[in-house]
Amino acid sequence: YLLHHCRSPHGQFFTFKLTKFIMTHQREEQPKPYYLRPNAHQEQMNERMVELIPELDSEFARTPMANGEWKSPQDKLDDGTPCFIPGNSEIEKKQDYIWMPQRKDLPAGYYHLRTQEAYIQVYHLFRKRRPRRKLLSYCCRQSAKDKEEQELYKQIDMLLHNRLIAERPNDVEAARMRLLNIKAAGGRKAAFGRAAYLPTLTTVLLTNLTF
Image (cartoon, rainbow, N blue to C red; front, top):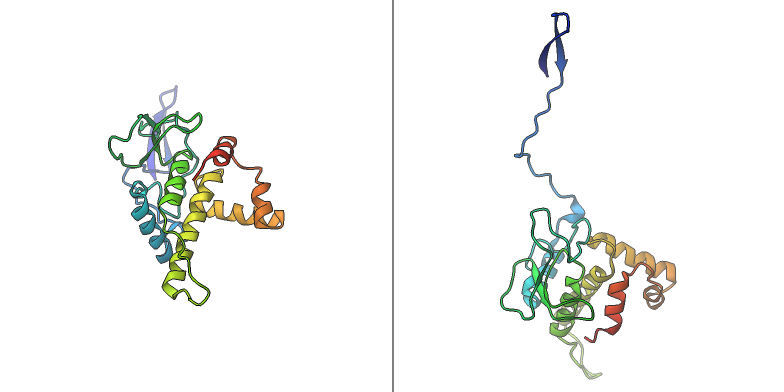
């Protein structure tokens, strides 16, 4: 605590005992809760995503992602960084951005990974670049490694798709929302058919986007 001295209108001195709060910019960083710390499998997912889409080598794209709220392309981050940079062609890679050609009413340019619009291009590139499932005859069996690889890509597909339809950029929350909707709708197909929480813009783009 500290002592604070003041004088009354009549010239008398009073001493008050005050609690002392010290606010500094050198606070120790609070540890992340366990569900936001990547486990070994999530680290593997992060590595594979970066292999396919190098733009995902960003603190804003690694899973488990929890970035508060989605930003609009018209927004700026707290440090003044724009969430959209116009550009008719991809001249160079920009850290934390992904370039997307014009899609419907979304102009061509670099979209920051804090925007949900960025994941339209991310998901498109993933579906385009991921290895296709090997065609095996009925007499052949998949190796354990092949099955693990297929399961890994399946989970990445689900992760990126969840980001397209989630209300907030939070992987844990998006996964729970997906499960709740599947359970409430009585099945996977019905769940996505009744996904009333889908953002309108994303719904239209997903409907018309050819992968």
